[in-house]
Image (cartoon, rainbow, N blue to C red):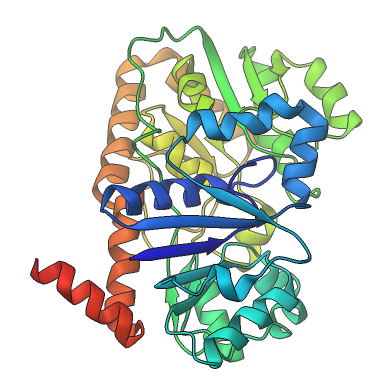
Length: 375
């Protein structure tokens, strides 16, 4: 089958973590014999910011790191009807412009035989409900929400006809341990500053414990304000800016531990949804300590797959224990990696996606899947 994916960007992962997951999903679909094409706006903010921040070589990394994936940029005169004419499945991400969301629904309503899905991986369903309510989703066959609480929100508000939970996951072709790399530093944090959604949390759970314990290491991410950079300069941690996602597994391998600090909107309004970085870190076999979040769907085994910290003092105790107890660190790392491989890989998510399509896809898609299954 042919899958066409409308995404904010596949080429750029600058402040755009959803690109990580989508790259893994498309790679897995291709490995199973499907054809894939990503379509992204030529003026997307992630692409423009990566180019301004890092230059053309950073954009060129996509072709180097993911040579089998194709992403085509579209502008104002692009023929979207022609682009999806031979598609079996069209997936439209939540950051797609509302007018284009509506246009693709219209194409489906006017005779398109593809299955049309809307994919939401953000908190606007609770933080900016009007923006989602105003989207024209009536002609979409399926909505994919990246957590059960978000799915329930869609159902309660009547946004979309059929809504399924479809969590993000790790691409274990890319995210896996690198035992050949020596661990040379204590702590690595990889995450973007965002819009002040975890400013307090990063001070309490990252900077203060690292400073108190004298933990050397690295901080990667973008959009850090000058005040945050000044605080980091006074800590033992080195701020190193943007990192290509393809380089992250080796960066994890150079450090003894990492942490997960969820954004406040997810903790307060959308429990059960971790960041993509948590899946990726556990897949790489690095011990992880997480600030408090409610694993409402039982995705992981708390205190086995990762250690939980209710406040900065508990975070410091866990980090200190991991530093001085190699057996504990190895146990946490192995347990977390086991859970990812058993439940949370892009292969698992493609299985789920194909299951949804087999049950709720158009007749064309159901027939194609049944033929593959029979074969």
